[in-house]
Image (cartoon, rainbow, N blue to C red):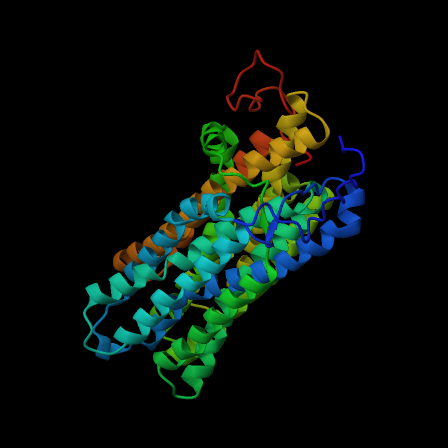
Length: 471
């Protein structure tokens, strides 16, 4: 109520309002993207601006995370590393990138999306400078391994970026927005591979490549500071993390994401090494080919999200696993026949399918928790808030577990080369795994008879069953 003679307070503008002098002008106090009037008037413009600079930072994070997938191509016999050493090195880098995704997810709520983007971008200087320092023959494998582990922090940028952007966009736009955010980040993999191709082609060394990325990291941090925002409504909610960890769908989706993103990042690290070790390609010849698959897989990810928005993420994911299984079966044949043209062509197709699946699986996450909110009797903003709360918390766990698939792929290749001298054994294992993913997707999210996961997250015939066919 306004006192007599006092002018009423003007309405809050989320683009300019601040929580307090302590928080500063980059904090947005009120945010309601599900309100179409709010979204059309100002919300969409703000969300898109944050999306652009989130993508930039995440993009460079992916490049630094996958840095060692190209640095090993520079490491000839004079470095004294065996193929098994190189697969182990890239496996451990992938592992760190997976593990740090969990704390990165919750850092958004602690520091704010903008603030954490600045910090996480600046942290990429550490692995880049460290690699610049040690990249020369005579450095021990243990030193390379330790410095490689530092590059894992780049993998965490994905989790914090996805959690942040998930809060900015309404449910009806999440498939497209999350797909674009993740695809723009994923494309950091082929970009650094293309940069490496240029450096190798120009007879440059690995330090030239690192010298390109160090100033780019600084640019990303500065732009995030200038143009991004924090959402005050994204509070540090440890209860959401606990609730997400208790929900069966978090772990089911983690398993499915191993099949899509785990494949994408694992193949991105391993493709060049498979070409050099199994098909006798030189580092330059391998570099001419390795970027194609990750590039197309990254570009197609927003399409996977868009298709999921339109037809349902579960359906797109199911059919995508059929395609991945078929492509992998052909790869087994190509590997056994030592047919390089067929092998490369089908590997590129498999990369494209991993990208589509990445988009469709991530679209499923907010849809699942929104469905559970409706089943609980929640409506409107209350249902949307419930869905954002649990989907945002679960994304970090799902992203972390999914990235562990990349570790498994590199370790599988390492063992396959040790045992058989080729990657054929690993591809057979991947084919079986994709078959299991198909069955899980169908049984949990598309099979209509009773026996689904209930609203409590546990299987029970006695409780009302939820239908997730449209997620």
